Length: 248
Length: 239
Image 1: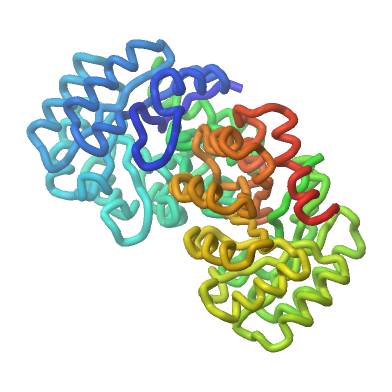
Image 2: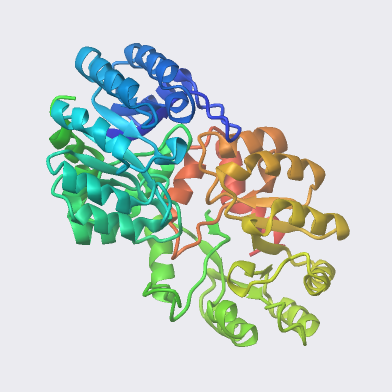
């Protein structure tokens, strides 16, 4: 079973005891689950310093040919974020942009973020947005304005909205280039993938794991357990990402 | 052998249309190779615990793969001791509490009285982590022989859990949401495998994901076997 994980991280995880957070742990996971590709973003860049975090991620990505990078922006720093996006996507080959509204306190449709997204849209790389909850800065509903402003931009709703996963699915249904990734969507509802497929089609679901914060076995279990066909499983685990990223 | 310690069944999931039927539970057991399930009727959670326990008893009596768990709603209080004692004698193996649906605190004196009865009857108490690990520890400290299985322990609970498990040898953990890469491995290394219990929350939860966490944990096959079946068997005195 070929796997492309479109939602993973690199760096120390200070919120929980976790010995799998370094490069060694990450690579062990890639080996164990026979990953073909894994697209990672820097935890430090999300939580604290976009400069240092993205730079360290660059080194990690170079260390293993299966890794690809998302450059992380912080919408409180518009000019720096635009410059970072241009540097990492154009010069260094990163394949997308990671946006984490909970950490910057800037929703994905804030004026600052929309300004940065003009550059991302021009460069034609996908964004992976952390979406979780209902009514907060990470509410997937904020992505509606992004879809409206940049209809050609590929938007991935990370966590599928989390505990607001039905909201996430509905937002994804509004855009032609909008996808969901159900990692860390651990609320007990064993029909989530089935419902997402019914509303969006299997071609709009991507496989992400949130590793090494979470064990890939969890998200893989969701896909393996889902009431979908084998072909749809292959699409979610691999083909849909290839469709978006091409050669990757 | 796989024993799922955390399942339920019923006719209706009141918050939305969900299939929590007995047929669905059994279907999931067959699909994932689960040999036994400790289960109870959702009627006892949301409506009347006596009627629910009756239903659990009837269903489990017809299928040896199903092991009965009882529940008691502390808000009712009247007749608790008799219900717990009677159900234990009928073969119920675990006492489950559902404060997340019934809205009580486990620090209440009425809950403590139930805990005392559970301890007297040698019934493990099973409850969700959201009651607060500190409150569970307080309960365990107050009742020396009481055993508690915490369900739904997530990665953000691990630090507090590590300390609580040191403090009380009678604290057990269901593995369903121990979903960080070494969540299970770390606990096994520190405390041995004996205090981890496999559960999935089926048919609401993901049996495949829960099983995967154990199967991919960096522990021995014997330790996996303990988590998947042996520990809960020992804890409830046989299934």
